[in-house]
Amino acid sequence: MTFIQLMRYLETRVGHHQLPLDPRARDLRGLLASCALHHEITRELTQAIFKQNRCNGLEDPVRSEPTLAALVPLRLKILKSETTDLDLFHFIESWCAAATAFFEEHAPEQSEDIPAATEKSAAPVVSLNAFRIRRTKSWA
Image (tube, rainbow, N blue to C red):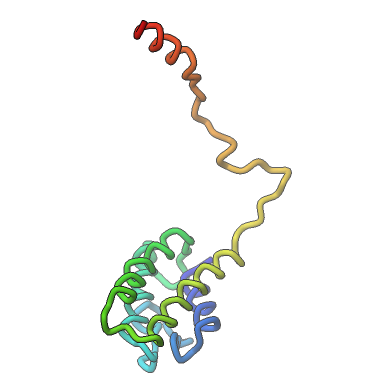
């Protein structure tokens, strides 16, 4: 999935008033319209996701781990701030929930016939039993 697909999904989920995207945008600077309800934090969130995923353009791919990692510091900043009101709290929570839902809905299907990549490892498996037996004998 691409950065722009994520942003369009978030715009749909959190609302155009929270994330107003300019459909004519060609880069990150022109993506966000200036009429966002929480413009500064919205700008910070979009830039953090863009940067954390190492995007160079709107069509670059995004992954769940970097995206959610980008949201964490800003979420904590909002939650720890003494000036955070209920609206801003709901704002960041809806962003986090929508981002999580995006990656759950767009997760690649894992076929039961094909083993997972983690099951197929090129690294050798080393038995530690011989080492443990040697070590316990040296203590005796």
